[in-house]
Length: 390
Image 1 (spheres, rainbow, N blue to C red):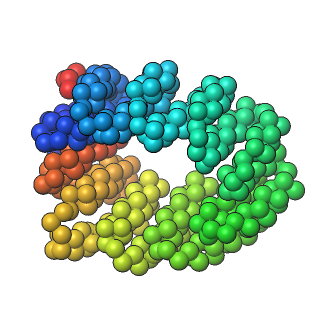
Image 2: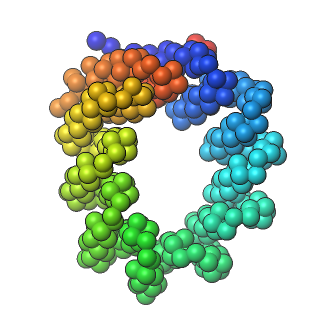
Image 3: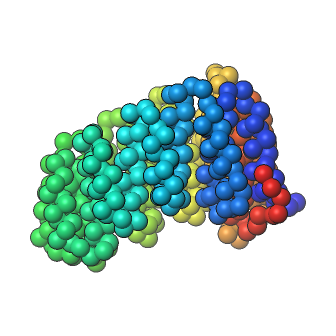
């Protein structure tokens, strides 16, 4: 048994997308496929499909749909570093709300590219305070990266909102490895009323301490972080906070602690009463466990997902989004198993199961997206793009 061809899956996804009834939905899915092609460095296909997608968006009669998709198009341009092209596309967005989102994204990307003057110029057009401060945060982070710590401090002073200001101060403290500064940021984090945001700020403080070779202090902060997360009343928010925490612990090579937190996240996800919210949470956990090569943990989570999926199939005819996400999880797990001697033989059959699920999805849009994601996953096996065109 061999791996399928990734290019053929992408072509199949495009063919399915072109069969969608609504023109706006066609453009939306083509945009997602283009994004996926860029993400796997298939630039020839991506470039060709980018222009076709742009034309379809410009031809839409529905002004709101056109503005929304142009905003997504600017997002794609920004994420691919096509900053000047994004600047040219932005004036085509005539809906104020969608334009506001694009202004924020463009300014943040300009910051991250080191174009701080351009970022601040773009930010001057932003009316929403939260969006403006998000740009200031990005500017401050780039100033830190460039070693301009006094400038970053000055930027932090301009941020009125507590959570982003603390986050920037924590990063400055992490760069300075100044215990006093870190303590100030930690105390500020503890004053945040919202438990989700407080746990996020505490987590960042713990990460800074760990990376600055202060393991005892970081362990104390991480315990406080976990206690804070467990107090979050909303099970959906608590699940996501636990998952994010586990991923951070993996990044710090604290695998044993991460496994324990992942298990808490799975337990929290099972407490979510709405199955349609629980399934995406479990999918996120399984994908994160897979990325961390925690295969036994990932398989256990996948079993739970399959049980929920079966429950959804019994109760709801609208199961396209669930099968789309489940196929994606299986596909990622399958290609990652190629790195494991223990599970390598299970990889191709598991990927075939993912394809079967994707192709069985009745909702055309979900089917196209599932196939697109599997095409991207396949490139993890080492498959290279062929010369065929989309």
